Length: 338
Ligand code: PEP
Ligand code: MN
Image (cartoon, rainbow, N blue to C red; front, side):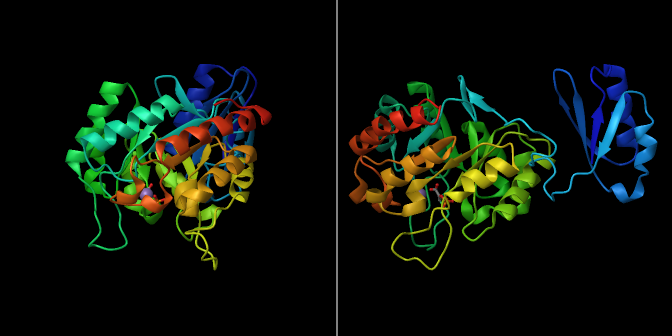
């Protein structure tokens, strides 16, 4: 439920209500507005007589949260969340954020080459997988900690933010040491232990949509992270499984508008995994920016033909640069900048 405080309720009144809620077994999530403060109370409300709270000084109203996702939803927080990830880069603001880089970190030369190129083209965050979830156990599964160290070295040398995927609860602390953002991949969207572990960190989390997940399941996965106290969640539409085989996945462009209505969290798009084919990446990227996505994550490789993973969907640096140029007028047309 939501406890709506009266305009200009005092700090003491707010604290008293929080204390009362805590004593009743609720987790409290206050959202301080300039005039009004609301307190999200998450817990079992069947044991509580809400009218006892409505008599407390400073309380205006008690409103139930109807949706199953309480912290992620718009019922509790009306304004869009802006997720700061460092160096003045934020998801959900006016400026779109583009993440780019290879699917997997293969070595120093490859990573520097691609990092320099994507930075020059305007990407703010470098991506690169060190732990790769692969369909076949015989495929390249990443350089693991050696890859994380390379990513961190490039981050410092080139002054870029970095993101990499964490696939196991045992690695959350390790990956957090090297990466600015924790990526949770499609295959792990419902790995609830992993979601909770990432929720206990102070790192922003990029949560990709599961291969066959509904939007509600995806938002509930985000709720797992937020329920542990980490409010910095960025959603990522990366295509879902349908009957269509012409592309690797089917990108759900509707998800942008639906998520924006249901949630205050930012949403970005991954047209690389969404299409699986570099030829279609640009069209999908442009469409998602036009639809109101808050950013993009794109695979770029200096030599896609010889990439260790996801070469067919990786853009060459010059093609990525063309895309970045093409996105500018589209961003402008929807009131954003890039
Ligand atoms: C990736 O970003 O390289 C990746 C494995 O993505 P997804 O989890 O969306 O398949
Ligand atoms: Mn990939």
